[in-house]
Image (cartoon, rainbow, N blue to C red; front, side, top):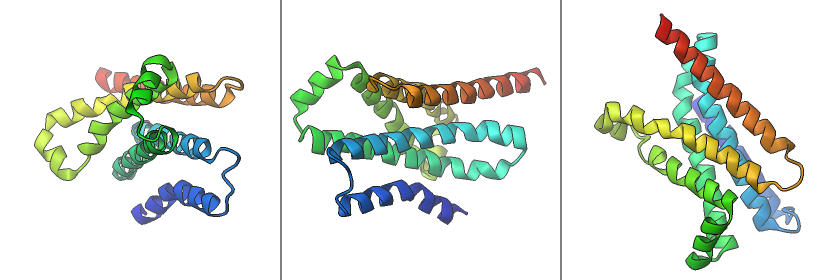
Length: 189
């Protein structure tokens, strides 16, 4: 199953590559790549967060073994999203990037999300989990503000039809609400 999930997680990138090879990325290919990689980073981040409530609601603890892979793939797409911005959009113009981060709130939110996800990806190996011990769990709580910032990034980015970002915000609210309710019910037991 992990091999199949790995391929499923790679499918959006393979599709982007196929579209690029066939010159089918639209009038602004850089923007298309940025949007798609950001969307998949957010999709996988929300799926990662949804695993714990799903396990508690269904009793299917086997789902837990896929959480790390989904989280790492979320970061992989976030990294591609950031690198597309850094390399293809801004051509390593760090002065311009810094101005963007300081001036455009959606970029500030997105960059903050990326910064919060970076230590999570770097500490997702078995060795780091052992080395950090209890602190690993504390560190990985950064996923909550990262997810909120990711949704805010999407909300602030979209100027006209905000239907999709609002759907992501609603999904995140349901996931976080479910996690809170399930945690509270565990606490009462």
